[in-house]
Image (cartoon, rainbow, N blue to C red; front, side, top):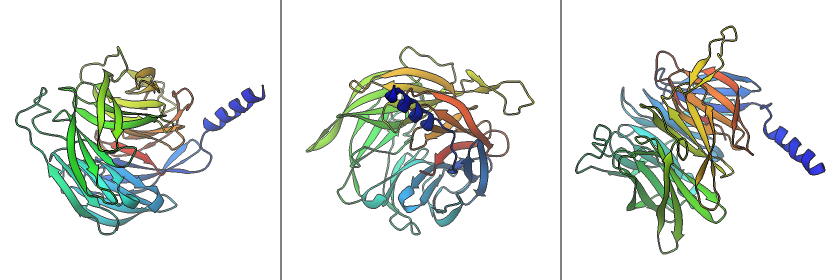
Amino acid sequence: MLRDTLSAGLLSLLLATPSSAVLLWATSYNDHTVTSLNLKGRELKTVAKYTDCGSEPAWLTLNKGESVLYCLNEGWGGESSITSYKTLADGTLETLDILPVLKSPVSSTLYGPDKSGLAVAHYDTSTFSTFSVGDVTELALAQNETYTLAEPGPVPDRQSAPHLHDAVLDPTGKFILAPDLGADLVRLYAVEPDSIEWTELEPIKAVPGSGPRHGAFAVAGKNTFFYTLNELSNTITGYRVTYSAESAPEFVQIFEVSSHGAGGSVPEGTSAAEIEVSPDQRFVLVSSRFENSLTIPNFDKANSTRLPSDPIVSLKIDQRSGELGLVQEAPAGGRNPRGFSLNKAGTLVASALQDDNRVVVIERNVWTGKLGRIVAWATVGEGEGNGPNYVLFNE
């Protein structure tokens, strides 16, 4: 009885609405801003907006220990860039440096000694780049590699050139992976010891025509798994990862399933977006765009018309095999959830709804992996379409 009481009390604590302020940042194309947001209780309020990340601010990477935020500007309407910000306790940002870079940087990850390197995937310019960020006021290019294709892939209108779409640091910190949507590869790089320099290794072959977009690792006991979310086929591919002290890690494909789990299907026009592994390494979450398969209550309490929503799909990881089992298809809070993130405890999911100019925060049960009610929401972005595309907790 005591154990049940303690478990119930712990569960209640984990599901509680945040009582102290939680800070988040979101990027949006249509108003060209990075928006600071403050979540307290059931209110998500705008703290400030910043336009110096450039014309199309997209991906955010946080070095929490150093209180530094990096923003990638894809630069479709101008010059692409990386901006470094100092994060202040009240959620505001102080610009430290702005570095022009190759077009369309879409994702980044910190790596190397004291997180002194920033690895970046460039979609349109088919390039993998790394930058020295040890001095956050003097960002500098370290290395880059640009790729070409001999001929288009199985989906020619999307695979006429390599399109690197993510940069993922492996659990050992010794390797960086870059899913390449255009080439149906996951490019692999070995980081030199005590350095931010890297050497390219043999890439991992993806399923032809799948278009790997984003990837995530899960460590389950002694097992390591790597999952890619594939935009063109709307599937998830799972790999078992085996490390060797004397050679590159081995990635063996163990399955390919629908983005809605084994046996699942999606409507025509669907486009898989983001993948995250829960902090406890027990669940995979993915977002799926352009389905409009679910509905949510109207945010206007005087309006009873329900609103369309795309899903965030939760799947449980089999800790031995790495296989994924469907847990839930839950509303993402609106249309086109291009990016989402979890808080450190795994109790909250922040979702950026690009077609609705909205960011929402959703409850999550860490034991079942299921998403619950929307805790809070805020308007982010102005004008039709191309609103918020990424949101990140200050954790």
